[in-house]
Image (cartoon, rainbow, N blue to C red):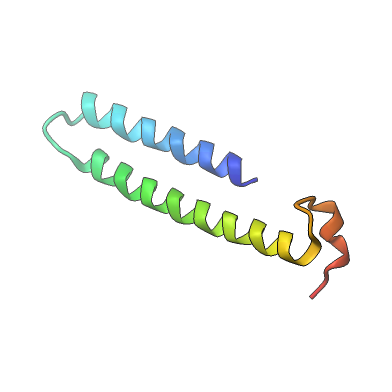
Length: 72
């Protein structure tokens, strides 16, 4: 699921860059939005890595189906 969110964010970045270049060539608004989205994607990746590390510490496996026994 996190990989699909990353792909969506990357496609949004491509759209921002393309529309910025061809519709408003003198402005940098699309580039600023792209940098902001890249920062959000990096934060999302850090959260995903933290979740995977926590899952591994609790189950000694990264298999999500083996984590069904963990109910908090």
